[in-house]
Amino acid sequence: ATLKNILHLSKDLNEILREEVLKQSLLRSDAMTIQRKRKQLWLQIMKIDLHFAKNEYNLYHQQQQIELSKSVIDTINVDVVRSFNSLKEISQDTLKNILKTYAVVNTSLDYCQGMNFIAGFLYLTLGKNEALAFAVMREVIEKYHIYNLFNEEQPMLKLMFYQLDRLISIHLPDLHSHFKNETINSSYFSSPYFVTLFTSILQTQPTFENSWMLQRVWDHFLIYGWKAIYKTCILVLKTFEEQLLNMSFEMMLAQLISLPVKFLYNDCTSLRDTLLRKREEAEDDKDLDPEQRRDIIREAEREFED
Image (cartoon, rainbow, N blue to C red):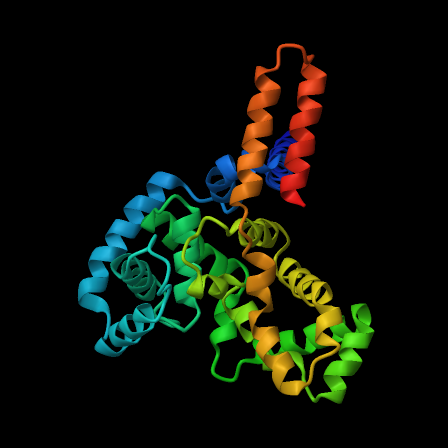
């Protein structure tokens, strides 16, 4: 019995170490490595098997054609038409496939507004693979209890509003006082932050290419859970605090809704090109020793991350 317990303990420790290595790889690797390995790391962290996910998706996808009610299908179809209107990298049929297949799996939830943005974001992040987008969305909704956000009485969402208000009062007291004076609380603007996990910022964007910051938020979310979303909320507000302090009620509300887009969706094209150019130059420069070459590449990557 003692040997059996030791073997179990050893297995558990190996699993803990493996998970920690995966997490650190996602959080600490250089920008280009993360971009290249993100799909693989996400699947490993979420413990999703690629082949099983594809087989499961195909099975449920066939069932959705006969098992979904007309009301669920109509709701999904209406929402999809209004989703990602400017983004050409995902089709309406693709989004419908993912959402209808999920509705078959989770009959108690079916479909709720906000899931369309999560599904689309995951599809684009995971190499435009419907099965993987479905598998990760299913796991995320279950693991982080996102289904509770769609409860009719919304107890979880109301709790999140309260918690965010408290965090603002602690970390941004001046802004909290200004909100109070203007009779604004987080329920006025933060619902899409939580319900779509910031993915609704893609609604008006023409390309997915500049979503590096949004993907980094999700990197942290998959590891730290809701703490990462709260931290992002505070960071967004802190970044624009000075501007918000000089705004009245109406102007502030309009800005608060659009702030995540300004913060999380950045044109990284020129920075990425600069990073690639510096990397190529360092690798081609025969006068540099390996350590100097690594230092130049690391510095360029830090600039990109910042």
